[in-house]
Length: 234
Length: 247
Ligand SMILES: Nc1ncnc2c1ncn2[C@@H]1O[C@H](COP(=O)(O)OP(=O)(O)O)[C@@H](O)[C@H]1O
Ligand SMILES: [Mg+2]
Image (cartoon, rainbow over all chains, first blue to last red; front, side, top):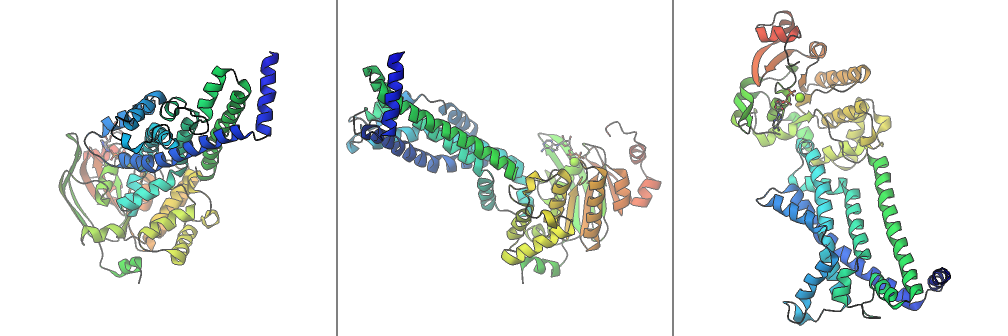
């Protein structure tokens, strides 16, 4: 009991003092996950929009696969990117394994389906609702597409934030392709796993508190954005 | 000269001619070999019980659906007729923006933007009595207000033909009366009105002629006076007496 409360106060002290090790880990986490979410949004949003409005053979299969990939275990995502980037793999030449770049790729791979699937759902719902109205008003397919993107912007923002939340909280993918090298590829989640097993509870707890705060803030932001949008725009 | 003024001065898109138009979904016939011609001036009411095919017929006329067989022709090329007609859907969809922006959006699609678009949108809102609510998000407005925004959005385009699908179906009497007043004003301004309703009183008040639809077929066409006093078919008589099982 005593030991745990001591760990908590030490963790709080680390945060309050902007402990350099802790700060470095937090910043790398943010850099990796924000880069991954930017890439995933760039791919996932247009992909989701295209699947939402286009009709082509195999569309249903793609939707099922996309939805299934939303639940892809991070360790499996990590393993696949590991195989791709490992010395014997197709992209082994690039020497990216155990670098932050590899971690960004793995997380982007993990969350692109999440963003694409959520965007697809939102845009398709809107498309079904708006299609006849937009056509009646004389919108071309292209301008209808932009109208849909704009009108679903809050749902799309939610999709992107969901992707970020997943990236920031996962440990399996970054552990496998990053290797948890101190000062190079150590991020919050992998550091927590390691420090806990080493028994360095203050650092693990401090990082855990920051991660929790981040995830809570993110979810509150999602919730409030949706609420406000609903009130403001219906 | 902007596109709408051009269209007001251009030749009439009417008459609209339907020849043997059928529409089927998965082999199930919804519209069954309907032929008629719609001319300018008269207010045409499409009447019939729920499920008769009124909405589908109107969507075919407006070009939202393509007939399975038969032809639908305007007096001008379809691409020219398209922008000169408007439709208020049975459930109009408001975009997630203000009432004013909803109308400006429609005008912009017709090439009228900026200050002129704004002015014309405000004028349209004025016409439906909603100028004071111009900046209110359209989706949070009441059903009756949304219906009036939809009317304003259609009217702002100065269509030669306006299709209205059950414009008062889910409105209370006050809101319905207001919608009827607006439809009348649009007619008075020279726009051809084509409207569906299953409200007989409304058909009498707003209509000049009636197309009676039953089971996807055009059963009877008559002036409003004639249709209500002396229906020519047994089906129409039964419908007017409220005896059709589907009403
Ligand atoms: N897109 C569609 N697919 C299949 N059936 C439809 C479709 N639209 C309408 N129907 C059917 O066609 C019939 C006529 O519908 P509708 O035109 O909406 O009737 P109403 O006269 O009440 O407006 C109904 O039986 C309806 O279920
Ligand atoms: Mg209908």
